[in-house]
Image 1: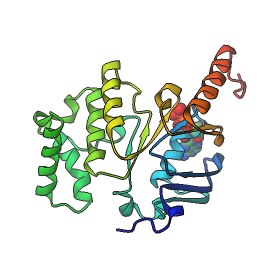
Image 2 (image 1 turned 45 degrees about the vertical axis):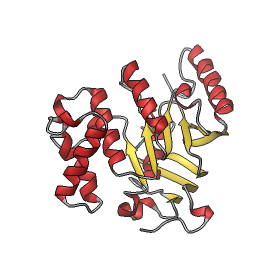
Image 3 (image 1 turned 45 degrees about the horizontal axis):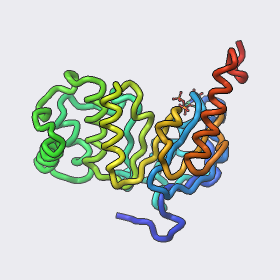
Image 4 (image 1 turned 90 degrees about the vertical axis):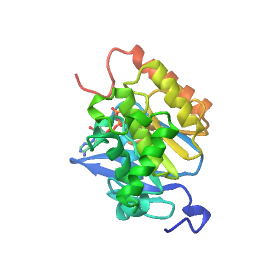
Length: 247
Ligand SMILES: Nc1ncnc2c1ncn2[C@@H]1O[C@H](COP(=O)(O)OP(=O)(O)OP(=O)(O)O)[C@@H](O)[C@H]1O
């Protein structure tokens, strides 16, 4: 497997990355070099957060500029990305494709080259390690939303990617499930890039990037950026309508 060859290749780099679709520019000239262990991406609805995550994961390629992960363009080498980047999508329904928990967990491992028997064994071991051995044969349809979200996290962890991208990981989860998931995420050794519209979700992160209308509006330590973002959102919330939307 290819690994970073120079410090500038480490982590995730965006060089004037632009993404246009449907006749409009969604991200404009984003330049970032992300190497910190806990990174937050804040932004209001429609600011381009999920699109940025899709670019980083290689699910879409920039229409201009460049994106590299550990020195490799993610959209051009999806296989190399399996060990480099994992994604926890906002909606588990967009991630889960197999009928049973064990099949779902084994899928990624098979993609990484494990035999079917090895993948199933590793899936069962992972479930047992998280006190969920009894889930193996369960139909995914019988799991609650929070349990599906946890299954998706286990699927990502099974592949042990060096960076995990999290798209609003707490949306739709009740408070105890949020607290549990947040504790599990905090304990992970990997680099985490967490997308949120909630400044509290990224308040203890090493670096926070504020996206606004497809551009970086602020980039810095969490206390500064998250509090400036909160102040702006509270100001906007005090107005009767979004200033940039007609009607
Ligand atoms: N393929 C596409 N074609 C056209 N427009 C798109 C496409 N993908 C995203 N958009 C638009 O780009 C903007 C940014 O979308 P994106 O999902 O990245 O925002 P977001 O910050 O994640 O929003 P939210 O917080 O609401 O999930 C939105 O206005 C969306 O409608």
